[in-house]
Length: 206
Image (cartoon, rainbow, N blue to C red; front, side, top):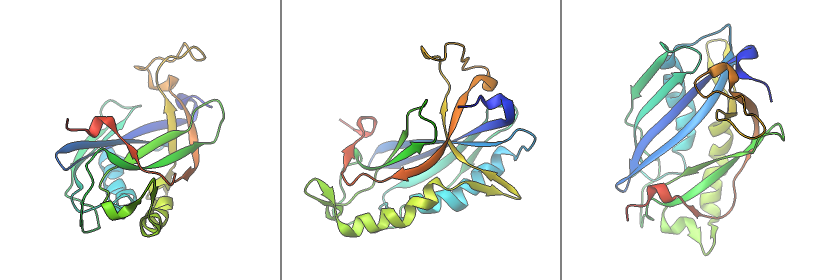
C-alpha cells in the first residue's frame, strides 16, 4: 500500500446527477505517474466518453447526469467541472424509487485496505425478482462491468482505478488529509456484482 507522493498523483472524479428527485453522487479515484499531468478537463472528458458510457448501460433514462468534477490532489490549480447531459440507456416501465440500487464491489489488490463499493440507482420493477435480480438485468450489468472499472486512457497515459485512504486511522496516524503525498492507495484488482438489490439511505427523499 504505497504512499501517493512516492510515484503517483491522485485524481478524484465526482459524478453528479439526479434520479426521481434524489441527488446521486459517485466518487472514483485514479492514479497517474507523478511526472505526467493530464489536465482535469481531459480527465473529465475521458470519464464521460469512456467510463460513463458503461455506467449508463443498466440504468433507466430517468437517471440524469449533470456534471463531472475532477480534482488533481497534487496540484491546487488543476481542477475542473464539466457540464454533461448523459442519461441512462433503458426505457422505464415501472421505476423503483431512487434508494433502490445495484452495486459493484471494487476488489482491493492489497489486504491492508478494505475493498470499496459503488452503488447506482435507476432500477425498474422488472429488474428485481424476489430478493435477486432478473437474468436480463444481470446481463446488462455484466456487459458494463469491465468498462466501469477500466483504466482511463489519455493520449499515451493509462490511469488505473484505485481505492484510497485519505484520513488518519489507528494503523496510519500520520496521514494528513491536507497533504496529498500522505494519501495511501491500492489498485482495484477487479469487481464483483452481488446478485441482490440494496438501498442507499442518502438517496431517500423521506
